[in-house]
Amino acid sequence: MTLLALLPDGAIAVSLSGDSDSPNTPRTAIALFTGFGEDPANPQTGLNILNTLLQNQFGGNSARPFDSRVFTYAQSSDALNYLQSFDNLSSIGIIGYSLGGNAASVFAKNFPAPQPINLLVQIDSVGISDDKVPDNVSKGFNYFQRNPSYPGGSLTQKVIERAVTPAVQKNVKGADNINVEELFNDQNIVHLGIDNDVRLHQLIANNVNDFLINPLTPVPEATFAFRQSSFSNQASVSAADVPEASTTLGVVMFGAFSVGSLLKRQHQQKDKVDN
Image (cartoon, rainbow, N blue to C red):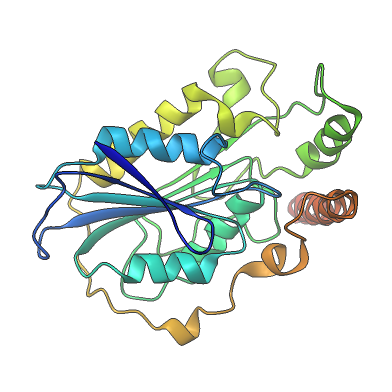
């Protein structure tokens, strides 16, 4: 039986009965970071649906306990506290969508040594710190789309799509970069809906199985030692400067942040050409 619990900070924790593992049993845990304006307490958002899928596929096994939780892109410290609550972690996965993709990359990069991050998944990532898989990450996937239109969408949705899509990170160095429009032969995939795609959800679940649950190579062993002070305020410029509420001002600021991200990507491309 699956149990849902609304936590004080608004996030949703999912647990399955029967998962009464020993404190010394190796555990897998995943932190998921939502995009701009998404409520982590809403079970119908894309990452919460993905989270439920992961729990249904991998939870409830006392021989290999599994936990996962959804956070906003600005809750890096809460995510660290969540992972710190386990003393038997053997593998960690970080997943993020849009601004949450940037937050996931920064979170992984700043994760306290010596514990490695075994899997980093970025979904249509938007930010300024998301263009390279951090050195402490074993495997990275970057799923993206290139569609700047929003057929049938509202004016606000169309404006957001045109502003954000050019800024989406399409080439993360060191990651498997996958265009989901080409992969699924579906040109209707857009930024504001990619996180709800059930085909992508299952693909990510396969990534979790292959690199966290049943890895082909042994998971690196490390002492799970945290240094909370080194991580408390690293949520990244995206989390600090972009408002959480989906107001008109928030949309404008999100668009401005996306433009800044786009300019950075264009500058990086120019540098590559010049060199």
